[in-house]
Each structure stands twice: as C-alpha cells, then as structure tokens.
Length: 226
Image (cartoon, rainbow, N blue to C red):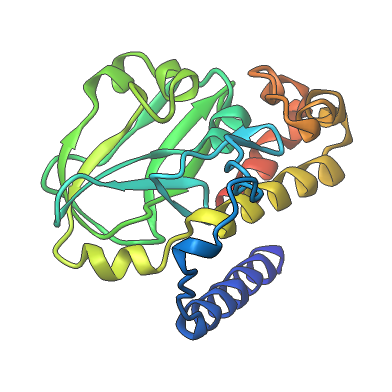
C-alpha cells in the first residue's frame, strides 16, 4: 500500500509539472529596463536533505539515475540516497551484456550482511556494458555513485520517451527531500545523521549502520520500490 501511495504522489507531481510547463510563456524584458542591482537567481542547491542531486541527471523514484550520453546510449547508476541506505555492500549482481531490461523492473541486486535487496531500472533497452570494477569492488557504488560507481550502460531505442517518465530539476529535489523526511519518521535512529544535513550539510556515509539490522532490508525495499 505504501508503494502505491508513493507512486500515486509521484504521478500527481509529474502531471502538475507537465501542465505548468505547457502553460508557461516566455517573458522578454527590454534591455534598457534591466537593473544592474537586480536580485540574481538563487543557485541550485548541490545537496537536498543531505543528499547530492546532480542537475545533469534524471531520476527514477526507486532512487536510480540515468544520463544520456548519446541519443540512444544511457548510463545508469544509483543515487546518493540509495548509496547511503546500502552502505558497505558485500556483493552486487548486474545484468549481462545484451540482456533486455525494462523501465521500472528489477535491474540489480545488492547483498549486505546476508540480506539481499533489488533495485529497478530507470530506462528500457539492451545492456551495452557493465562496470566490472563495481562487480570486483561493490563498495565503489556507494563511495562514488555518480562517478566510478556507475553500474551499466544501455542502448535504449526509445530513450526520449523513457526520460519523460523520470524526474529532474525541482521535482527531483522535492522527491529527495521528501524521502529524507520519510526516512527520519520511519527510522528515528537516523535522526542524528540527518539533523545537520537538513541545514545544507551532508548525510553521513555511516547512515546504513544506524538502521536497525532487522529493519534494514524492509526499509531498503520500501524506498527502492521493490
């Protein structure tokens, strides 16, 4: 039921974002009336709720990301929120090259302290490459989720349509902040790690260790929508 409510909320925000974007009209300001002391736009925060959200990526509500490298080639990984929940995993299982994967369906599995959790794919297509370094060193996915910790690349014939189903910009930041608040309510023991992060700080890498061991798998499945 929780997953259904979360997905319903996500779809509702997508619809709102779509209608606002469609109705938004460009406003042109004559150059002569622009004031030199005009207030500059506020910079986009690099961290939301203590978690890093790069602007150049698009995010699935199951906390995986996608980056378009060419019209049909997409790089995929887990976001910072997921990496903090996963913590120091012992092994990761990735799909094989050539395997067809579907958006929103199981893509990979992480094993930690004998518990295995799955994560879903943000994109649909054929697996073009797999990050062998992550298979050998699973902790890389947690330490550098947006860099060396990428997981696979995908040849996606319908990438443009797939990306329309993902979040970016303000919607992605809202989603991450909402997830951070939900995590604190569900697991009060993480409050200390996220308290300073709410004021612009960074969530600690030891966040996963503050989730009770018996609850960790259930928490991960709830947020990863599996």
